[in-house]
Image 1 (cartoon, rainbow, N blue to C red):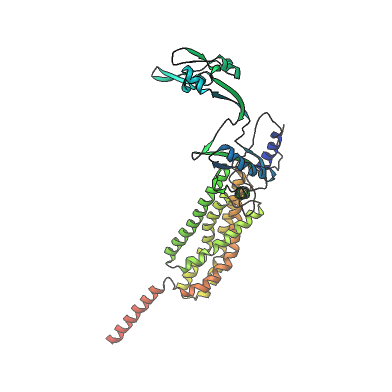
Image 2: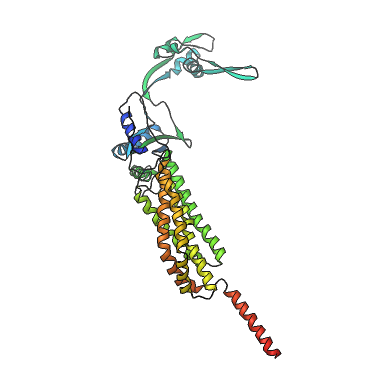
Length: 425
């Protein structure tokens, strides 16, 4: 009995099972772990270990001719395991050809022949009956023993227009050929699907890029659709990218309203790219990739990274209200806010540790989110203490202190009082 090793990942165990099952020719058994993530390079990865390339067209043999070279290339790619097509015209099928001239002479319609074949070799609903308020179908079907071989066709009779019965064997000829049991369609178009599993160490993004290149070489890129994990990967990648951009915009607008300035939020948001680089470095260390889960972690990092900048900028503005210069205020703020920044960052990073170390079902998804948050928070903390003070010193001088207007009003009122007092004397 095959059992996983203690240090074996879900994908490695699934690959081992697939290698064992590939030697069994009597059944087709495929192990596909749900929610697994694959390591990859720039192409990304994730979303599951099974992908489907769907090629559409107008004729099944033509679609098969075009997809066969893609299948051959997939079989030579070590990153793709057990590539296969859902179109295999090898199942025996009996084709019945009607002699229409003879049938017309005997007064037998093609409909009568089709109805006889449907009834005897398939099943046909002839009526319904109602019992206890429930309606049931009445299906007409011959015994299995009388509809298993080609010779059973010789036992059938059809009724002619005159009412007489005619042997079906005198009207038709039969031949056996290989055919596919299913003829699938996608968007009402005939389609053939190429399905493959991802080998450990091969990402979903790399697999999609490889199959796209093969489809382009065959000139069928415009007829390609995606299914399985490939479709989920493509849809989620675009959706999470939009969510990441909206998160940046929302945080920036909230900060702009809070600080009543465009410069202060811009200084704070400079920490986000640093945190993103830290998260990407964490993915590299953890041998993971840019996928749906890591992108969720990057969205979380937007708030964690902005928090460090807010602590420095807000306190620096308060010190400027007390009369300190921009340089003095930001140096004092970075010094006094060092401990809160480190404490909150360590708390955020420590909260991601259980996601990294905990295994079980979905453990790799949690690990990807955890390493993104952990390394992103650490990088953001280390670099924020240098980037935010530098850019605040460069740009904040073009802004006014939050209480500058109030101080001018107070100074004006004091000057007016002094002027009135002098005039009274």
